[in-house]
Image (cartoon, rainbow, N blue to C red):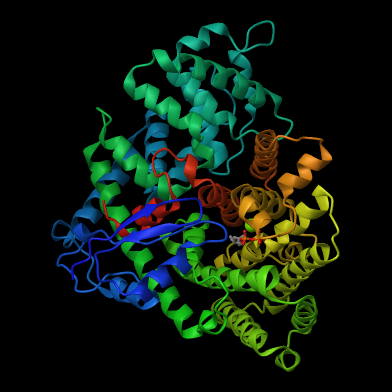
Length: 584
Ligand SMILES: CC(C)=CCC/C(C)=C/COP(=O)(O)OP(=O)(O)O
Ligand SMILES: [Mg+2]
């Protein structure tokens, strides 16, 4: 039976696979387990058009089928060997980048490369160019150029002061009215303003000024600028997840009249190549997960290697981080199981035992646990040790104390939530959110990544990787926690979970309307972005690679939990499909 599966999302928490008649019931039950997500839904739809030949059974009904699919040659006939063409295009682009001396043209090129998802090939060249752009204002620069320069420099970790925008103000200290005529300049200012840090008031004014004007001018714009403006108002560049943006922008770019066909072709070839890499990684994670067999024993727990992998691609989009993605996905997969033990399955007494055993961190401690907890304990213990071994082997660092501590902190955080719940205690918002950063796995993920990436690790900055964790981690983790609660609070409340940040915030601020509560949480997220941006300004002792990972974690959180509001992809299913399964 050929598979022409279609996935349609029917309601908030269910998705169905529209499979031909005759598909065994068991397949459907696997699917429902995949899709009846506590948090979000991710499903896999293998488009028959991407396959060179029809396949005999429905493709994705379980992890075995996913593995089988991932082992197939996924190339379309037109994709055959692209390596020569790709290399040639890379070289041509590098030459163009090096020979573009006019600053505005160079900046536009860098911006396009970043947006198309191919900038990682040219990091060194781009850094040379960006460093050559002085951070002082150029007095003859127009608004578009100044804002683009500001955004590129800050985004890429270079110093630049927002004072360059003073020139665009009139004698009353307000942005000049005449700027409103320049739609692209206003759009550029709007995008730049989202990189503003706390205390950079001029960027806040710039955001209010440009946003109000862009909204007003939208109905009068030509179709192309109108589309660009409405996309930016939906979600500014600074908050977009890189791989999804590349996928979306490649299409938009192909419709731009003055586009560079070489760049477009390179972007498409590269996208597909990276997609194949992701498929290999996904296959490895799925194989590992199946072999671990944790959810075969703990049937109540979430079985979602794909969701875990989506997180890692969001956090680490660059191909070079392949093995970091794989290790991180493992930690998230185990986190989800432990979260389910604490949230839905374990009794308080069992949870206390588990927490104590984790604090001891040795296999003997496992003996006191109920059977179902033993396997989870050992899975965590072994996986963490394996990651430590890998880091020791590759980098020579012994990091068990750090990795172990983040897990102990997390499990103590889960225990805290469980005891609030079982004692009927209501924490205050601040207590809840700080604890929620830990239980969302934010510190765990970033501490692991710090060592797995392993760039810029020094004796001094390594000391920052224990409680209290760096502000960078907590700002990004707070964004993750707030998005998580925005995305899952209703389901969790129905299940009888602890009050989420939304309810706590509403209670503390005497807000009775849900919609108002959610709006205010979105404002808190905006403020947390300003805290995060400050990390790019202050550049404390942490390396840029981990700063970028923390930013990306905040970006990925919005993607995972706010999919309904994305007008292009519209669901997590579509993200997964476009990222991992459908080539361009
Ligand atoms: C990058 C990382 C670490 C991702 C993990 C994401 C996460 C918070 C999973 C738990 O979701 P949940 O909504 O079930 O959790 P909770 O019960 O804590 O709300
Ligand atoms: Mg949740």
